[in-house]
Image (cartoon, rainbow, N blue to C red; front, side, top):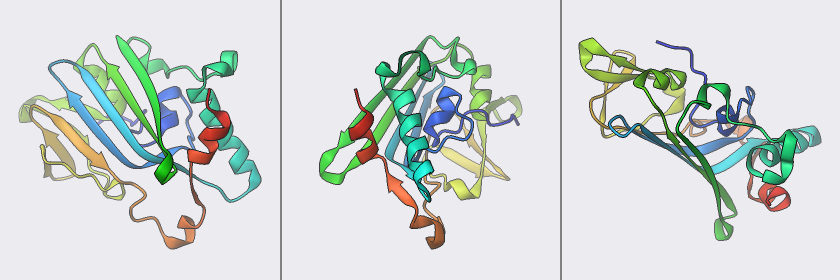
Length: 186
């Protein structure tokens, strides 16, 4: 299997931010291998804040990813995505829940490009395979877990909840990004 270059639940990894501080409580991924469309929906984006510097870094990261006013300092889509036919990022809010969400839609050209997400076509299985990382809490109705991999035949659809089993000692540092967005949005 391939090195994971883009982590579905870490928003910044789509933009080349290697140590992205922005992750989602729940991430839904749907890949249509026939139409070559990847849809990634991030629900309730959050970060971990222990010090004031953490707050400043995450506000800067969010601003540079999602606000066109960042100009020359704005993060571009990561290099692996430059040849993708379509790339969109939509930020949405849920004010009543004070929640920030994001949706990414990509149109890739070849199945080999899925390797950047650590998804590989396995000819012997006639399926796409994704490594199972237990801490990611992967759920799917279209995949089958076999050994240490999830196998998908036609439709690749799964959800990840990496923060689900976060230790309480860390949970106290978890901070939703809604208020950050209100400060840096266009």
